Amino acid sequence: TDGHYIHPSILNADFMSIGTELDRIATADSVHVDVMDNHFVPNLTFGASMVEQIVERSAIPVDAHLMIEDADDEAPAYAEAGAASVTFHLEAARAPVKLARDLRRKNTQAGVALRPATAVEPLLDIIGEFDMLLLMTVEPGFGGQSFLDTMLPKIRRARAAISEANLEVSIQVDGGVSRETIERCAEAGANIFVAGSAIYRAQDAAEEISALRELAQR
Ligand code: DX5
Ligand code: ZN
Image (cartoon, rainbow, N blue to C red):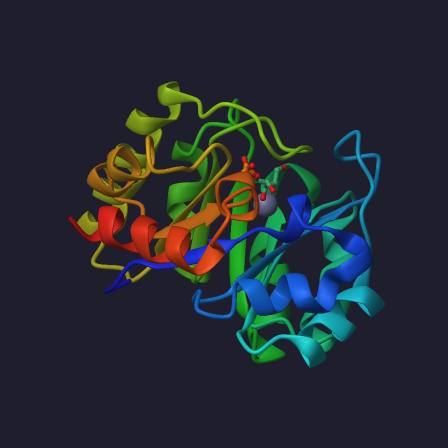
């Protein structure tokens, strides 16, 4: 959890040119890939075989965010596809501790994600089973939505509890992260920042990545 990391989301990239879209963000720390099944969220993207191809093509590690039902059965395939981290939603898992252990056994970092309306407190007793906590700062499903300021106290409470327990768990924020909102997230205790439209809409993605990194470290 030492250091601040920028993870561009390719959800708003041009899917017809995914190779060159990955090249545009090669100075980032990881590429965030949003897997959606049209059930957990009202949008559909791609599955494990596409993720495997992205892993092969990408110069940087792949951070898979699964917005899918049946995480227990579906998530291990993304570890097998070579993702460096696999994050599933708590709302979609029956046995989150067992699943985290399954993922870690496959040499992948295990992440757990919460929708905006899911409380973080019930998760705190098992947070040590994870490498990363993803706090959604928009309703999951689409890029380009506005950041929910009301999530800042949740980030702060999660960071306080993790520090109090002497654990090393990263906090990732995802949704509406931009030059306007990243400092508040960092100040509240997030250390991994997903940014989709902010980076892909920029003329110079590398410049946007370094600007975000600098603001996060302030
Ligand atoms: C939304 C996805 C995000 C999305 C972020 O459900 O999980 O990763 O791509 O896009 P922006 O940064 O545009 O909000
Ligand atoms: Zn995401």
